[in-house]
Image (cartoon, rainbow, N blue to C red; front, side, top):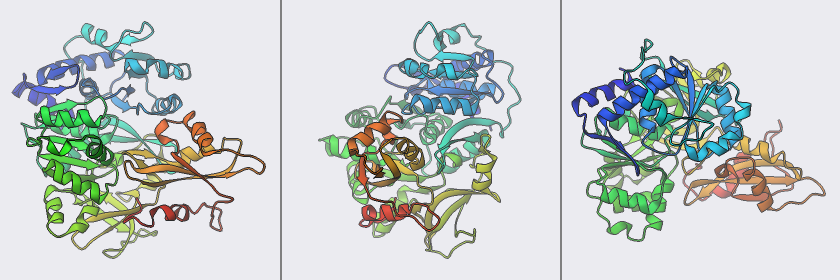
Amino acid sequence: MLLHDYLTYWAAAVPDKTCVYDEQNSWTYRQIDEWSDRVATVLADLGVRDGGRFGVLANNCAEWLPIYFGAFKCGAVPVPLNFRLHPDEWRFLLADSTATAVLVQDRYVDKIATVRAALDHVKSWVVIDGGDPQWQSLPALVERATPNPPRRPVIRPDHDLWQMYTSGTTGRPKGAVLTHASVNSCMIQAHLEPVSMHEDRQLIVMPLFHAGATMSMLSNLAVGATVRVMERFDAAECARVLEEERITRVSLVPAMIQSMLVEVPDISQRDYSNLRVLSYGAAPISEDTLRNALAVFDCGFRQGFGQTETSGALSCLTPRDHQRALAGHPQLLLSCGRPIVGTEIAIVDDQGNRVPVGQAGEIIARGPQMMRGYWNRPDADAATLVDGWLHTGDVGRLDAEGYLYICDRIKDMIVCGGENIYPREVENILFQMPQIADAAVIGVPDQKWGESVKAIVVLRPGHSATGDQVIAWTRARLATYKAPRSVDFLDALPRNPSGKVLKRELRKPYWQDTARNI
């Protein structure tokens, strides 16, 4: 089964049903199928097909769907770019992926133009929604393209589907390559319970450069449902759309849920009777926030845990699990559920041996939804994919019933509002500041975002700097969300005998009163 087979089926079965809509556009299944045929022709004419990579830089919009399906139909591999990144970070991702074309929303043309000269391997620059004279126009290219798709390469289930970048502890981004087979398996595995329905109306709020949002969109299309895309999250607007547009399913990160509960005064007086399932994940959620949300939205809640490398899903805390938690098993609210169908999860020690039930260790997993590997990173493959098992870098434990609890991270990754932030990347920028002799970056508890970035800095003798100056330095060189929100100053960082910074010791004062260190 290939991903575009779903679109072909529903375009024939319900051609005039709304497939996807946003604030500006509404497209039927027939229109998405026909438009994606033309996109496939455009990509092939640009020389991007049969495994060729191309970048996509855009806010959430309905155009993501025909762009993705056009790529799938001609065998091209999209590389979605996080629009929050610094242009130098886009440059690295496009260079690493060897993308030969870039599709960009008009609002980002000026920013990415600052690194265009350094990307001579990119042969085609296409604006998705505008008419900049130095760029090709996607609407114009689509209008001129033949409505018949190009002669397609032989696409098999193991053909690369997309390449999404995730970082490691070194801070160097790695391109996780997912295939038709792995993503299709995950769609089936993750959505057996609760089953997506043909009549569903799914709201997409999370950014479509994330695996989680993309999987939500594709999974609902697979059953012929309707997808509503919001350009970006706004608490009041999200509450309005949920109520007035009869949304039945929505996926949110905990920070979005918290914002709605706090920032929308009449949130509990609104009518959410159409809402069947609220899915959350990508970051830990506080028990108080979860209990309040359960009371306000009064629908089935579903938590997912996974990684980009696993097509987005490994385990699920189902609506039945949430009901059980409220009926006398409150500890389950701290769990991320049990493995989804076809997935094995194990907890191992430093030597790779399984540990007893209830004991913490590294979470490893295997199943059909795993990535093919990292793009041109055999070293990372060797460390992450071992004997058929994917090593997640997260520390967790399993209880006697098979529920998974995440305790901490082996990797130092910080999750802030659903965004992954890698301390080493921020530390590298801090070390460039002339006043700084030593630095470490950790995540600390944040009521709204789950975690926030804290820099702990040692100044050079005879130098001075304020916390605001340190924050401004990093904001000028990294995406804003990666910059520290707070700074502490120490005379020296704690280190072990080999010289490694003891980040667990740095984190301890901030996490000692919390139920989990993540």
